[in-house]
Length: 84
Image 1: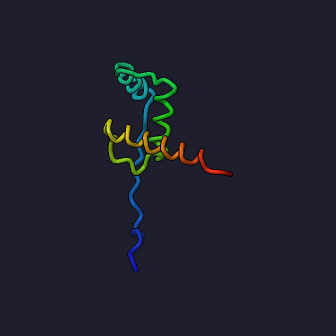
Image 2: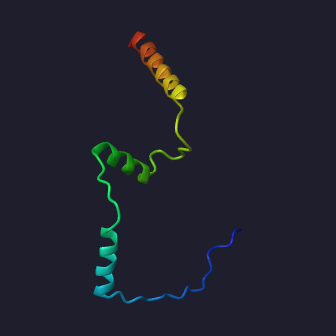
Image 3: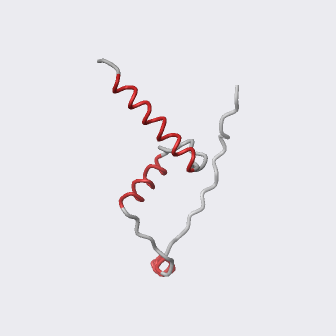
């Protein structure tokens, strides 16, 4: 059987954060560039963060994209011809 996590307690480090430190940090962030996402970009980001695209390993080339569209179109056309 595999060994589980160690039973030894990890030491905790406590840090006191002062109001001045928080204000300084906020001022540092204010100088960074910002980007407001549009609805499509926000939807893509949500899907990426939730793992919808996993195991996405890269981007499709133009020829693979066109090929996928053709295959999808062919399947739709074939299914419309079937009797129900």
